Length: 393
Figure 1 (tube, rainbow, N blue to C red):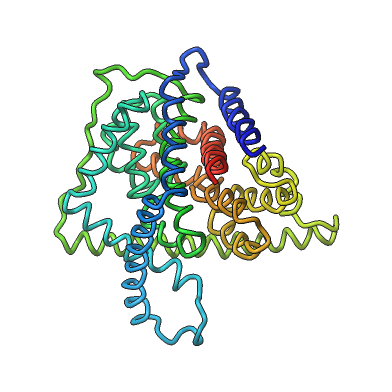
Figure 2: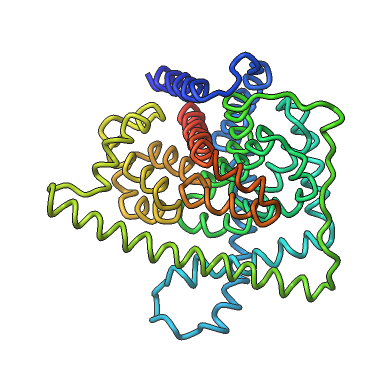
């Protein structure tokens, strides 16, 4: 039965993408089917094999060590601020982003990350039928972040069509940056975080190929990546330390605002209607949760968490998931966890359009115009990844 529901889920996702397509006649089915098969193989490998689980364990252990090292710096500055056996969210989940940001900066400075991003991007362009720039951008978004990635392609922005710009932005919203992966792993199982990272990369290409099909001419497909302004090593360290701290503070501020606002709205709805706002959202999103493979008895609670992620952010949703995780079937927990690992929410529209506008005002205005369509596509990527996982779990 689960395979029938998963098949229906795939058809629904593709149908919703097809309904929003701006050029249905030019949709290329061969690369789309190939990427779906790759998603199934990779998810089965990562979640159902000894090799895959071993790779995830290594990945998780690396980030575990990095979080331990980050903890030393945090303890030096903030030691004693929390009571014994307490784990303040800002200190233990958000501040380690600073150290991860520093490591990314070092690998960028040593030209290791740019080499990896270009190599993987070129390889992916052979599979997805898109341009080299689109493939590079998707990999770069997953490594350095959804706003920072546009700095590396700023020389190209002025020459990009609206179609290509949409694909670049869709990749940035569908993936998550490595600097924040460690924080996710403290909130959901690492194996689901790693699986979502891989699936979303291909899912972004799949959905963009349906919603936004186009052909890149060879003369337009130049992978001319902007080099960062030459800095000394310690200038770079200072910049990435501050950037990481800014991310931690911004996420913390957004959590304060969103959690407080959600609590107030829930209270108001409960007083007036006898049901919380999140429960209402849960019923709205329940059909989507069902086609993702969530059992009927759990679709309302799962739908509420999915909706919370969309209207607030993934951190708020992960916190809510942790509160009721024990009430979910393990398979449901895996499906929802994969869905949550992406930047697909309303606030990301402003982040991405603002990042592009800071580099090219004209292109930033174009991004703002298709912002809702961008979120629509990125949400379908999350649903597609969850459906794929539901097949192999």
